[in-house]
Length: 109
Length: 118
Image (cartoon, rainbow over the protein chains, first blue to last red):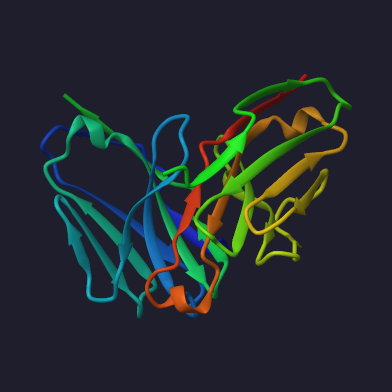
């Protein structure tokens, strides 16, 4: 079983839509959780960390459910510039990172 | 704000040739990593270095060697390149220290190296 699983998409949504991505992780000892964004032919970049209480950054809201081993990312009022691949990342210890395969988002005019 | 710098950005090799990808970070991070990314496969860990002086195999180490030259630099060598090694290679680093885990130990990537083996 993969450490981190994501729906690969693509999610095709119109501008202004709200879209949600989900991710599950298999190891309950996982300690830190992140969403990364990767644009075409670019490196992954940190979008936001995910905290147990949930957290928000502008139009982006991340949730963590440790009991269900589930992470989510909600994007409100989608912009064309949000089109990218979103990677769910989980870490354990000091240097063990596990990446989902990514969910592709296409925001259409 | 250089962060993680890797070179070269693009390289074409012939089968059997050797080359070294260079990586340096200026964030005083302990841990460094080399990943490859192929379409539909996601990021796969080749090798990592938890701290200066140590290296360990990741998920796909065959055909590669690494050197942690010092705390800043971590190189990846292809001794005899094969077409199956055509990929995008990303170097990355993280603090890799107990003090950072509770506050969110994030990983930072270089811009990538596009390698084609013909």
